[in-house]
Image: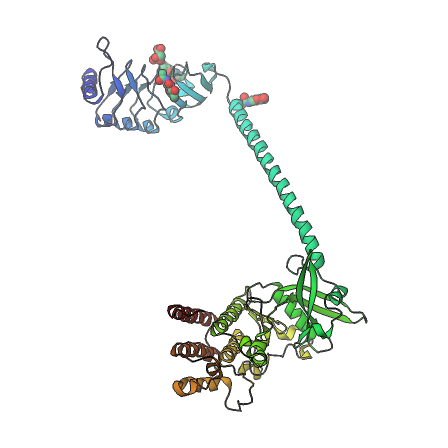
Length: 541
Ligand SMILES: *[C@@H]1O[C@H](CO)[C@@H](O)[C@H](O)[C@H]1NC(C)=O
Ligand SMILES: *[C@@H]1O[C@H](CO)[C@@H](O)[C@H](O)[C@H]1NC(C)=O
Ligand SMILES: *[C@@H]1O[C@H](CO)[C@@H](O)[C@H](O)[C@H]1NC(C)=O
Ligand SMILES: *[C@@H]1O[C@H](CO)[C@@H](O)[C@H](O)[C@H]1NC(C)=O
């Protein structure tokens, strides 16, 4: 019976395996085909002493009836497939005198039926399992595998727990030494870098101490006196709500830096709150459209009185108010902002507000947005400044000292402050949006909200609203249109859409006002459209 099955396999092998190795002693060559799994009724498979190469196919495990699997004396490679653990009927497994390698599979020890396992003369290595079949040295034959260790004493193998742990500890030692060498190199590089950085930072902060890098690094009173030539009147740039701003020159390394020094008038009630507000606000914000604070000074002046000052980046092009009004009068064409400059400024300011209103964890409300607080740098990029009234939203005003000082109750400037502030309402981001809307209307009409033309009922908002409603006749009256060369229809359409946004931002009721983020996006779209138009006309921007 079993001979019949063996013969059957030979027929199968003839068809599937490539050829006979030589004519004299015919031997099977090639690999065992995976289709061997089709022989489900195979009880015994003996292919010993052939030249079969390749792996022991995992599909062999599907020959569920297999009891004797004899493959000794071939050229099989790889390991014993894990699927063989399913061969419940297997009694004898002989893979001796092959080229199998790897660890001895532990499952062989757990196979209940297996009575004889011959894996001798292969290249197995590692620990011999100490369970099941492997506890009987006459059932498990493992001789001739020179990489094996451990197992029951009868195998006469050397113990291997130390061998492997040594191997491991060796690996660990190598790993640790390589790792620490690497770490050392990184640390040395880092130390070198940090030292250089520290040195340059030190020389820098000695001259213009930075509020951001050196926590409370401050400039001295004497240094500010030197920088501004003793707060000379020719260096006075302007007078703000709580003090005066001077132009000064300080050293940054070996480079001269022009700065703006805002000296708080501490006699003015609320000035020190304003100092704190501005310090606190500017310390945690950074945006290309906000003025950059360089340092602060809080000390005693030459007369022994309290002295507080803030040092900012100097903005060579002054503030927007000068550009819109006084410069326009002074020297005609030069001082006039072009339409594209105006929209760029409008977008800059809106981006700054959007940034402040989305500050984390709490929004910041500027509370005093107006043209004289918009500063222009060398490239006419707008920077929002003067955070003397700014506050973090949800900050409890009543917890502030000197509630009566005027600071906490001040809500911006007449004309720009939102109507609800007049009724003593809480400050909100909508208040800033209102001021922004007014600023936008002023920027594109050239009319101040505080102009004498505006009486009790008429204000800049309603004035523009009426003009927009009756476009054709009234738009021409808008100061800006007449002051610019011929008002083409495109220009009129452009100005109209910007003014619409100004109107939406300066609505009477806070909830009706446009979101500042939406305003930014719409202005960007309007600018793009205008630019494309100018380009298509071949005009310069
Ligand atoms: C195990 O295999 C070796 C080599 O093929 C052979 O010499 C030995 O007799 C076999 N032992 C048993 C118990 O089958
Ligand atoms: C045995 O297998 C190894 C690789 O595992 C191979 O390098 C070697 O040539 C094989 N020996 C024989 C006789 O096939
Ligand atoms: C060890 O294996 C041999 C051969 O399979 C068997 O005759 C013998 O009974 C086994 N001894 C034990 C203790 O199981
Ligand atoms: C491993 O080697 C140490 C000595 O190096 C010995 O004390 C220990 O018993 C060994 N462990 C095993 C499991 O052989």
